[in-house]
Length: 243
Length: 303
Image (cartoon, rainbow over all chains, first blue to last red; front, side, top):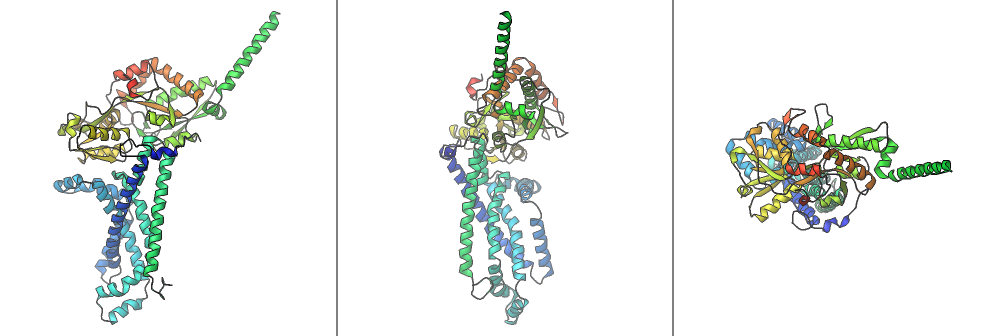
């Protein structure tokens, strides 16, 4: 290897005039976290609704949930973001398309919503599996108690199902963070985007991507720890996930 | 007595030659001699410098220059046969692949600047380009000052986006600058009216315009954001013996007038695969550079 290592590069001023190269990467990290959190909120809410629909007695709701999941799950995320960002404004009426294009921070909103919807399909399947894994008696007991369908889900099924799927949800959250890296294709300069910028400006490829890797690992370690604490907090003694 | 002297001379000459060749054979040259092969790094879409034609074979202006360098290396090493291996590179992989010895020359459109000299060396400059912007004729943006308050796109991580950011502050344009992943996507942003202008090396803009649906819709600005910057063929750092051979080969090519012919082939005539014509005659700066080859990373040296 004939490579000129320079770990001091992080403390040298970046050519954009916004501090050092480290500042460049940290600004990317902040954007990664903002995108990931917004995407995760969208994924949890939409995914829960669709997941519940897939377990309802109604045939229409089931088919809607089925179509939704297959649509978002079967297309590569890269393609989806490209569609939302470049194709959607072109098929909308001209005024609406122009409004969408001129929206400030358009790449950020597109990436958050795009990644959020992609992940929501995965959350929906997880939740469906969680509800499906409950004994049939639970649903019947809720009905026998005189609870409506909504109340049955609210007080009996969902509190159980969410506890069961908490560990897989942790890995979905980690995936959401990692998937934000795809947003560089629509011009969002998140952590991966800034690492790429840094290597283009300075030619210090390995330093840039080593730093990005460490930052991703650090964030994921924080998320894993946080989710473990949450799991312990919501555990009910005597149930599957309780101790 | 006479005999002894001539034997002595012959011995001395043999010794000198063997010593010279022993001295030459270090680094890349030794490697090429040992393996009988040289590896060129090429880009897949850097038109017209280095890109794939319809047979998926890399062609282009920089490729032609690299093949001339290969001929010179073959001659220098007195090889009967020198195999040329081709290896695709991207802007992210060209440094690692150069550093670990996968490629010996990078034949593309890489800007030679002082920052990058810390990592690699470049041979004599083969092209000069300035940062300009492309816009739709209908928007009529004559000068850089017309970009005030508009949305302008450039490619992330390029020197161009840096110059655009600096001009934005220096001229208080208040333009909204958005980065794009690559040139094609940045151009798409102008095509779809997401941005009014795309700031990039003028020659890359010319090739994007030539390849677009309606080339006559687009104009490249007269105003430039920078002095002309040099493109160079990249080679490994700290390999003076190899650089000497490569520099001599490119200098001979540029000063002989043959470079002008190769230039015209790629920049003023129809090129494969689609028969585009970039219509970019040689600039005075580049003519001057070909007459007096230089590997300087400093734009001030090219006037």
